[in-house]
Image 1: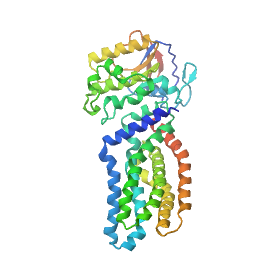
Image 2: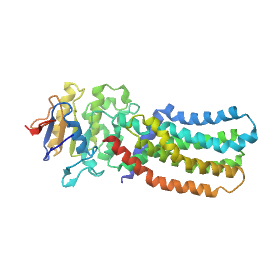
Image 3: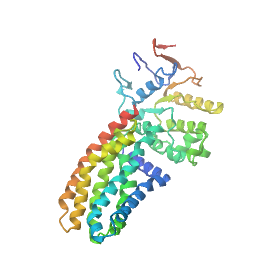
Image 4: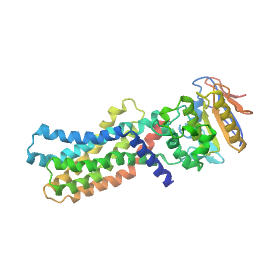
Length: 188
Length: 223
């Protein structure tokens, strides 16, 4: 589906992937995360080849789906990722204003609260590269502003972000990369 | 490989199984109910039931193990959780193995306990119970491994639920044959060692091969 796509990112940089529906934005993120195989081409992170289980720890991926089990509480849902990153669940939940809901089964949460819960998973992995597939989906203005603060803090600490979006994301000084199915991809 | 993460993954699966207790109990109830239908259909003759008890228990155990396999990986595929399991830094084979182990702990292990009253109910002598349990203790993990492998391979396929038993049953026949034969030998006072040896050998082989096949199935399904 994707052909002749090439990108490079430095520490602290952010990249916005845009393009029409079906252009391959989500696919590109999944390929970078190692979830979809390469037919050709490669992905290198700090000199190491991507797609291996070890490399997965350098990446935090936020997909379309929130992947929260309805029967488990937020804290239980995030326990595995908290174990990987070494951070505590409470810090991430506090940052996203979810601490009061941490011990409720996630089936009781609203769509926006679940999205924030899924974002907490990204933070907990403490990975240098964030791959965010429409992170602001279902979030209100306050939550989007919080997201902006967290993403800025991540970049200030030397982290990188690649995000797909159809709306305006609070990612200042980010580069844009437009995927178009027919004419190839362009930087703007 | 990070052992603590592997154990945490098993713990999470067990917690999920506890939260959805009805689903977990369904396989166990099916096993007991299915086994108790045989005396009703075959008649209450103790000699006949005593003769057939090992076969009945093994067939019921095989079918009960199949029940929860359909949801073993597909729930995670549907809610996007599979992506995050594959990004844990464990190899896909170990992710599959953790799910398979939790399947055995929530299905196979309870079956072992339920098999005791069922075998007594079918007229087995108390002395026959131990050989039967020895066979089931080797056979049920084997069924979980084969089933987990098949469930991962049909993951994402249309009508995977129909395909699943068709794929597993041929693979599970050796388990059924040697398992039931060991229990049968014990009932008739013969040595059941060789059959258990075969089950053990199958288990050793499956423990090495099935997680890898299941892991590649998971990876293919997520892409």
